[in-house]
Image 1 (cartoon, rainbow, N blue to C red):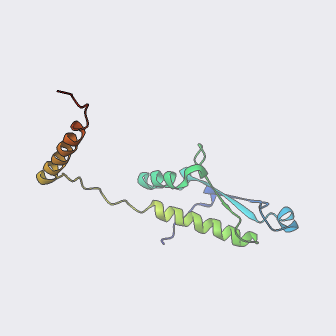
Image 2 (cartoon, one colour):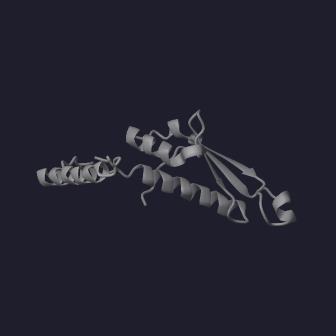
Image 3 (cartoon, rainbow, N blue to C red):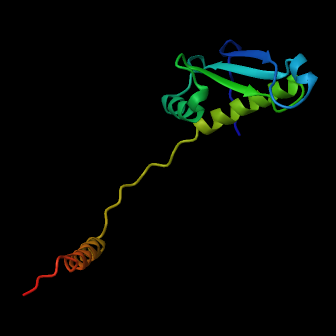
Length: 134
């Protein structure tokens, strides 16, 4: 995984109380991290930006802010590190280029086989018509 330089003004961290099991500690201590990343300040290439938008899904706001929430661990520092690692993984995946698709054409034999199959099916269906009493 490659490392990306991220400007500190593009990141904003908020510590919030985590939900779920954990008893009193969960309600008292703000250990969960909400990492907000301004995508426009990252200076991504257009293809990487498009792919990152696709990867982010509902975590991306209409104003271009990506929100990553990390609450897997019990300490702020561990959650902070987890959020940043997830951001780096997303950026690395966004920078992977998709292989170019090569158009293919069906061969004449494949087209003929398809037409023969359609004709055979048509004769089967034609045989299901009403029976005439001649």
